[in-house]
Length: 452
Ligand code: GUN
Ligand code: FE
Image (cartoon, rainbow, N blue to C red; front, side, top):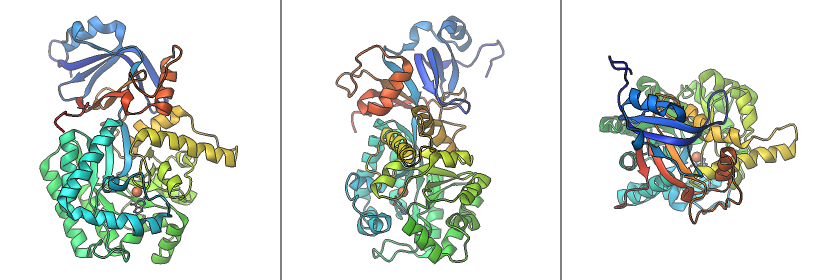
């Protein structure tokens, strides 16, 4: 915003160096020797060429000597968006991957999730998952918690304290025969969802929002699905759930909801498909169902590690994109064994290559396309792309400062590489040692506070 004398509001920080990000037009835009200014609210004030330093310094009232110059082998990329992660399941992440979905839920997941009545246990797990994901470059996470309202509120508090942008969902389920007590009565689910939303919104955390979370159709009566659809509609809230993850589950939904045309129709009929809805997996959706996603603006969270680990299926990402359905990547901890979005990037590439091996007509995704899915695509899938996802002026500065040649890091740079190869190496070989700083809404959140 220009002042009356033609200058602009002063910026708080200015960075100079290589910036890589995605736009609607191109999956990878590389800006070398660029200047990016962040204002006092953490928003991107300008993104310009380095040669314009003097002009920008006058216009935005900063001293050229205060510019933070990136080192050789460093670049900035947008923070990554994990569109689907179960914070509560982080406690057993990396184990229990020997069963298909429905048995896996009954055997491992529900018993563990039922422990989150204990707020001490919840605090320990939730603190670990927020710290781990932030360190690995997840600046925005769309979390499932458990059915417990107070523990879910605690997850929101912890995300806020560490400065992560988050959608937090108290899980709703009024059907479950596997684990005693790990389900709610219909009225309870409704009342506790309202309490969760009200209490979380009352906290006024700037970056944490509630998301209406029916676990998935088989865990909910139609009455509950319908009530949750109404709550989301009346309060203009985000919605998340699971859909068409494995074949047995699709058949179960057919048996439980015989009057519905399809799995997608079950959610649609109950007002759960909106442009603020993200549905995990969708491996077995039909083209007709994908059309319904596009018409309603609902998005798909692609969770390839989970799909491989639980032998659920392989999502054809290109087909989803061909239907103009929004798509982001998710870790789906703990069905997916890694909490790192870099792993989601690699597994997404693997999945598309498996489809290509099966049928060469399936063109494999490029690393640039998957980079876009992990950043801008995720922000679109969560309908947060007016705030995050790339370095467009006016968005919040959610960014990773990456040093590809971090000392004692996982990458050996043998020859001089250009920025495109540096990004590709980081995506394929990098880890948290390469992510030297993380910013959310302009605030440096990694390195983590040392007291923690
Ligand atoms: N479907 C319903 N609940 C879950 C869950 O916790 N994980 C996965 N992967 N799928 C689900
Ligand atoms: Fe999931």
